[in-house]
Length: 84
Image (tube, rainbow, N blue to C red; front, top):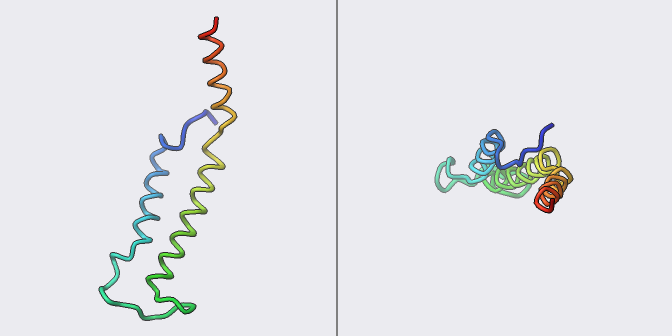
């Protein structure tokens, strides 16, 4: 895979926006708290699940798309070119 920073990959931004927007319960009716799931109102449960999904997704992106070794080699090569 060619080196490409995650910030330049468009689908990552789309998934990130979906996860963040789904975690904010703006789409639920005002004043609702039923049903209770594991002792939490369902809107809080949705927010917790979204936070966990965000953490898992960011971990995946950092692990698969952010290759620091390639970045360090690229910086070293540029320094060598400037030095010569």
